[in-house]
Image (cartoon, rainbow, N blue to C red; front, side, top):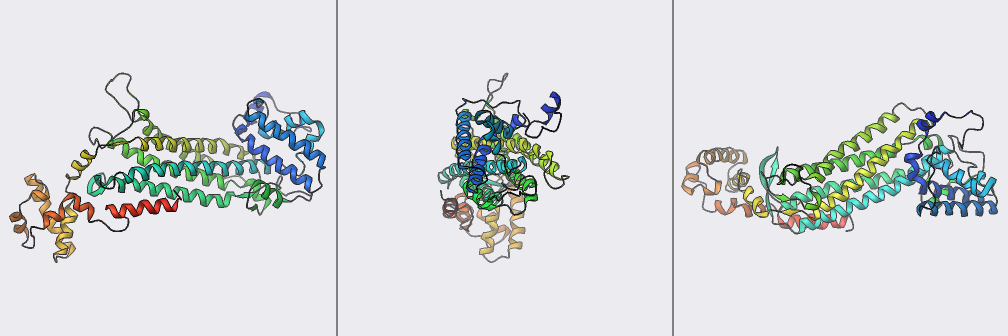
Length: 456
């Protein structure tokens, strides 16, 4: 039975299927019932319904909630939406008393409330997923403070770093993601209930009371905005898209680090698949799926941007289309974070291969220039001189540390025997003690600060 249909003829079956949303908004059953419980409690305390009616309604709403959770009660997918199902089920059980539930309320503020309650819940879940992933990143970093590897710019060998320094870069990205989630919560944590269709109600309701019951910090300020605001949905979708961007970047690197050309890491069999024709293959499919699924979350974001861009105040049926995008984005992001936690937790490092790779590509060239600066040359002069030395090393197929001191002195008499110690790979890492850098003591500070900022 429609909640709106007594004066209309009703919809044809095909139109009803097109119009209904219960197939996807059924997941809001708990939020819908929790919101109704708060609403009916407020109606009772304000004397709008009797205490007896309140007890009947609230008791049966709680029964309905528990029966849905225990799967004793199946949601009827023939209903228009979850709001209709809950109210019709209530009325079926308690009779005309159930029809008092919707006093001083519209589906417009009911939808907005359900979605905000859901949004608060999933923000907490994704926040937890991010923290769990960061914990694994920290654990991996603590084990690899002195695991030398090449750092890259433009996909070319650039400077010496450690695997701890590398993986902690992603720890910082995910930390910022948590900060954005927390910031979004400040705007989500307002109660739209009581806004009704768009202009509140003539009943003497108390929106501050329902806000307190439901755990919101305050009621929303403008009832027209309250029922049409979906900014917070966009914020969640953007936050999720950025989380997935960070995950996708990490997956991209882990995928090529696992290739035979790099061989820096190995994925656990738990997060790999094989080939149906090539028996030797071990494919990083979970990482590839995360990378691919990032596109879904971007699409979800653009979907809701497009829905909202032409909607006038206040509520419009267009807003029904925000939910599938939100639900999909949340599910995709949360599952991807859980999978990535498992990938990081089970990752196997080939430390020798990373160390060997760090000796290629003249990663200590900048160190050689720094050495010359310490000896008195201006940096730009040192830079030009080292460039010439690197060209010589390439021609002679030598590493910088393999060039003889006599050859170095042929470039400039300033070179001394101590240059070899200065450009040695391990010392290149140790000397980068600057705050935020890759040396062990700098990485240790990064780890401690990350733990402290997230109360880990």
